[in-house]
Length: 76
Image (cartoon, rainbow, N blue to C red; front, side):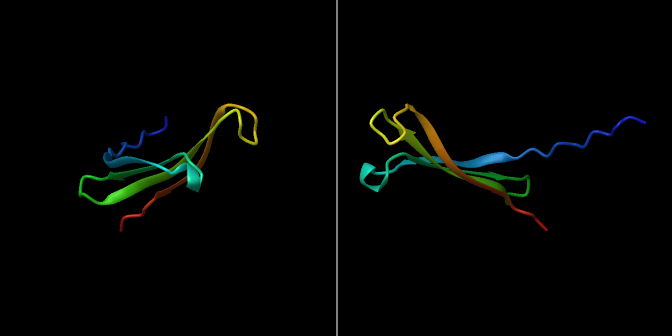
């Protein structure tokens, strides 16, 4: 009466791109990723805006800040 393990679906990463953002527009990096299933359908994606803080920034610390949006598309 143990738990049955659900078979994991394998997805293939088909998009993995990074774009630098001009410092005049806030700086940082825009990162985009997407995965597809065996049928070639996009089933998962991620978009992240990654901002690197410097010592001269308002936080007065070094580190990374990230705004991230992700989603899973339901395939019917």
